[in-house]
Length: 567
Image 1: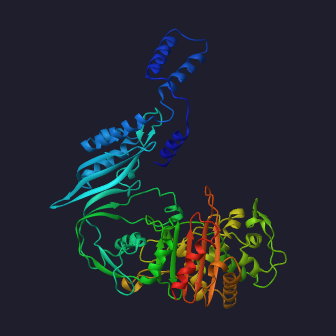
Image 2 (image 1 turned 135 degrees about the horizontal axis):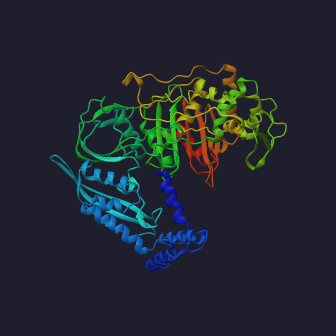
Image 3 (image 1 turned 90 degrees about the vertical axis):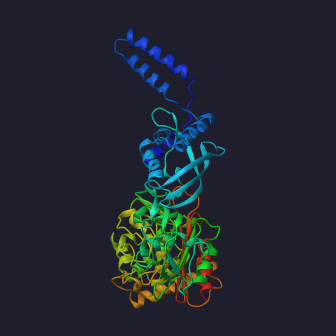
């Protein structure tokens, strides 16, 4: 599906000359027929050229006309409404996939009496509304939603067709998903906060995907009975282009769209703190690319999780380069290997080349005769890259796994998570990993855990549901840092919070604090993703603002506000 979509996108970008008319194609065809009959050159070269020209003229090209867009959309929607699945599928550029999903629309999803009303086209995109009824045995409920389709030129002949994706059928569908109505596979779950009060997506919008995940995990274990509902059943999707399936990111949960009859929910207590969850929701409100997580450092309990874009739980499932927040892990490794010492001189040149790449600092700054503490606080890239020649390819991977519990894909939080990725790399890519680029991928849950490990002195796997609920085992790290390394790392983060790149954001956050900022460059983005990880007392938090810029300016205030709210 991906290659077909790319081809369709390329066709939309290309604007060759529009052919004159269908009549011109017919004439060209007749001319070719006469030419072929009478010969056309000793070696047939002209004949071959004429065949190519005739074939090219039969391929429709150029921008789609308004008539082509509206007539194609009308053909598709009319056939679909009439129950002519084959006809509707033929109006798309992937008839087989369309036929399968449209057949399931009535057969599996039990949707009937559907009417589709097209809105005003916006270029090649045509919005439409759906009104229907979902019926299962004696239960029936009205269904209404908005969707949209896009018309493209089909590869090969240039005919206008609906660009087929599952989201045409329903906007909650991803390619590979399907709609099903029936007795829910998992009973509903009434999730409670740590005080025993029900958590709802209406009160806490960011928790919609989290609550879906809790139902997937604990629906059958929490004592409830299933109802009848229309739901999205997830399949082999290719991802959403934002890292959701990248580098082993966790799966997205099934989603309930309509309840025909309510089941009896079981109850499930979580670790979420209602006041802190409300504070987290406030911090990401209106910031689509923002995500944040707050943990209790000494236990790993998740106290709050929030995402500005509610369709995907980036805070737990995101797979993004963490930028310079990764330097917390790298610094711990350099300290252990005696490749750096807090108050001793450490190189921070403008540039450092390794593995064929030339690395530099932000704005090409340098610190002459500076200490490692100064380099960490100012986030000097070359101070870390310069140590690459002294490292083995797997040193950073081992540090992340053995000390910080990352990149092992074995966390058991209570819902699906992506547990970080620190692959073994060599040469330039290994060097880039030292500063949170290359193949390194993290999310706010991972980076909050990093700060929690520094604060508590050892790794405590984050969890949203206590392991005592279902007797599951939590992930562990194989070793801890020495007291000397731990003390040095805390000194670096504390100094950065007071005098370094994190100082402005952490101003007013009192007590035992430490922080690290980060900015991660992403291909195709004008601004980097801004990262921030910090601790205060027994609280640890991390956040990211995608395409936000410097972490201290974007994610920093968000994380600092949560640490303050924790008291």
